[in-house]
Length: 264
DNA sequence: CCGCGGGCCTGAGAGC
DNA sequence: TGCTCTCAGGCCCGCG
Image 1 (cartoon, rainbow, N blue to C red):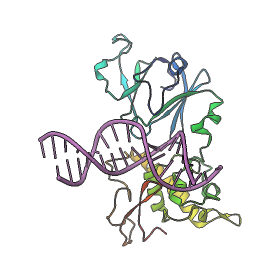
Image 2: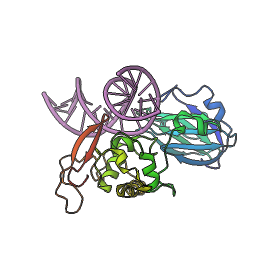
Image 3: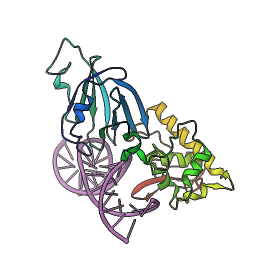
Image 4: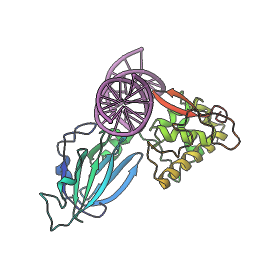
């Protein structure tokens, strides 16, 4: 997509989680994609017009690139429409001849077009916390974010306003790596007399390690047996020398997996 | 404002 | 084997 022009956009239904904006197609067609980037769990494609295409995969969303030949036009596309799935909801036909297909069975995904001001005012973007993979993210940044949080570490880390980009699974994984209990009060890792508490450094490191590892290994959220604690209730704790057994509890309506022995 | 619970949606997996 | 049922996730909304 990057550097190519969006020749045609087709939405194959009226909505994902919410309806596509009325001018969705009009504001995209004919625009060159200046740059692709990410903020939290959102994908952003900056366009020549100054608008930005905002995309979220939700739970089950994915993109695939279908290559075609421009001289083999099938309808308005460069490939056989019979190759489309019922859950292929948005098609971007690019000037490169490739078609980018957005597939999302559960339709928890999101697509929107925002203007430049929207980058700071859009509801989805404006309250996001720090990026854990930014250089600026460290124990102090995390401690500041957790300051005054009355809730548990699990709930705080799941809150995109505190730290951007962690989902249920990676919160569990990061807390285990850091040796911190998901039930612990979040503010206990906040600053104390100008210094981050010891656990904050461990947690900041663990968050970064979990995300880098997941990206490098191309984790999938289900059917993936490479998590240390997620979906491992009743199994031995993977920490060296720890005799604990992974436990499952429910916090804020979501499953938490942790080791009660080594996570304090 | 904050935190929590419910709801959206489908398919994988469990249970009969 | 095949049917039904539950439940998982991210995010938004409404409630207290």
